[in-house]
Structures are given as C-alpha cells and as structure tokens.
Length: 365
Image 1 (cartoon, rainbow, N blue to C red):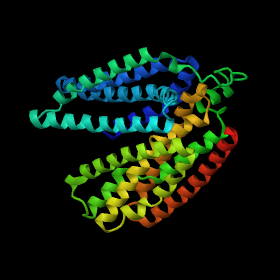
Image 2: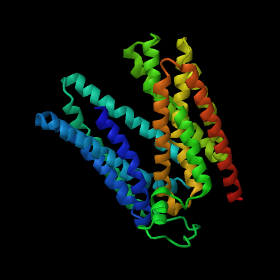
Image 3: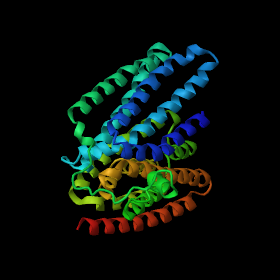
Image 4: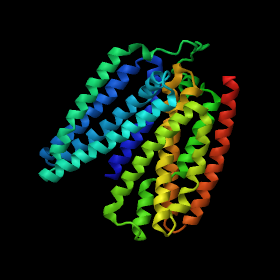
C-alpha cells in the first residue's frame, strides 16, 4: 500500500513538470483538463471490478490508482491556468477560494457515499461503482463550460510575446521548458517561501498519531477531528481569498506566523490546546492550497502559467517531503527540537515572502 500510494503521489507531482510546459506550448488547456478529469472519472469506478479478478485484482487496482494520479498531474497545471483567467472578473483570490471550498465538499461527499453504501451492503465495490455517477456529471458540466467560454484559454491581451524561444531539445530549452528558468525571480522566491512554510506544516498523520498515542483523543474520534480541520480549511480559503482580492499578496504573510504556532499547541498535554492547533493547521493548509495559487497568477504572464503551476507544485512537494521526514523523525522523542526547526523554517519563509512581495510591488508600479 505504501509503495503504490507513494508512487502515485510522486507521479502526480513529477509529471506536472511535463504537463505544465506542454499546456503552455500547445495552448490545449481545455483538452488536457478534460483528459485529466476523464482519467479520474474512469479509473475510480473501475476499481469496483478488481475484487472479481482474483489475484490479478491487486495489479489492476494498483494500475488504476496510478492512472488516477496521472490524470491529476495532466489536468492540474492547465486547470489552474484556466481558473486564473476565469476568475479575473470576480477576483483571483475569491475564485481559487471557492474552487477549494467546493473541492472540500466533494472530498467529503465521496467518502461519505462510499461509507454509507459499504455500511448497507457490507461490500466496497458497489460504492465504488456508484461513483461513476458524479464522475459522469462532472464531465457533462466540464463539456458545457468548455462550450460556453472557449476563449478563456487565450493569453491575456497585455502579455508581451516572448523575445525568443529556445529549442526544447537544448539544455537551456529543457531548463526553460521543465524548470521555468525564464520565469520571474519573484516567482521562484515565492515558490521557495511556500516550500519552507509547507515543510514546517506537519501532516495530519503525525499530529493524529501523537494525540492518540498520549490518550487525548480516542482512535474512533480521529476522523471527526480531521473533518473539523477540513471544514476550517474551506472557511480559511474563502476568507483569505476575499482578503487577497482587497489587499493583495500581503495577506500571505500570515501563513508562517500561523504555521509556527502549530507544534507547541498540538504537542501540548491538554486537549483544548491540541484542538486549537488542529484548527490552525487546517487554516494554514487551506491558505496553502488556494490563495497562494492566486498569487502565482499575479507573478507570471498568462502564457507561462501552466509551466509556473507545474514548477510550483514540484517545489512545494519537495518541501512537503522534507517536512514529513523531519516531523516523522523528531515528533516522538524530540518535539521541542521539532518546534525550533519549524520556527527556523518559518523565519526563512517570511523573509522570502517579503522579498517576493517587494519585487512584485515594483513590477506592478
């Protein structure tokens, strides 16, 4: 299970370095978005047949899970670029925030539907098969949206044409195409700032392991605590998205300040402190997954946004991997040292945030 799920997350991350530049070069944002969602809409319900395949079912299930993650990698950069353009009239902060909130609704509804069907039938496969219905509805809605607003994939009118495009097969072409070497310096500073804040933001698995181990929360209540954190995540995304549209990227300076308070709260011996830390963890996660993407759209020209979102996801993913390793190594016996490491990472993150904001302000002026 660890190998398959870990490989899936790695695929979802690494392939964005390819799908992002591909979307920008081909201008096929809609096609990549539709294909990516279609892979998910097909792969998940097809898991229902795997119990009928005997020993081969394990290999088929693993393949379908990996294909679902590939679908996410294919669609994510193109989808974020489309969303950044669509939300111009409503405010990008609000657009990404509403997207995140609705994403959380789906993330709740799917598992609840699966759990309800499993409770009634005693089997998992009928619930997985039933997920074909929301998958089909999502594809119908996506088709309607593409038909109504096809021009949203066009670049912003005020974007300047690139002076020259290096060959994609040269070393510089690979650096520009895959790693975004030609993207603004402020974007790269901001990516590293978010990576540092993400590295300090422990996973819920580490947090829940601690409060169950010390007996503060019973194991059966962990999903309820997680559900509360996800609700806070949605609300935080909506609130900061609106503030972003009013005050700009300055609202993101709160992220390192929130992250640095999480370890001392979640590792405290009192239940109220742990729950407060989980609430702040959910708030920081909500901002990381929504409002920061709105700021990325402000940092780069629309012609290169898919590439930028691919690079951004990769850098943030490296931060998440480093942070998960750090938290896993220190949380059990060295919680105090973990807190100081998180604090150091947030100081670096805050300084990088300030540098990227300063450069962006000068460019906009």
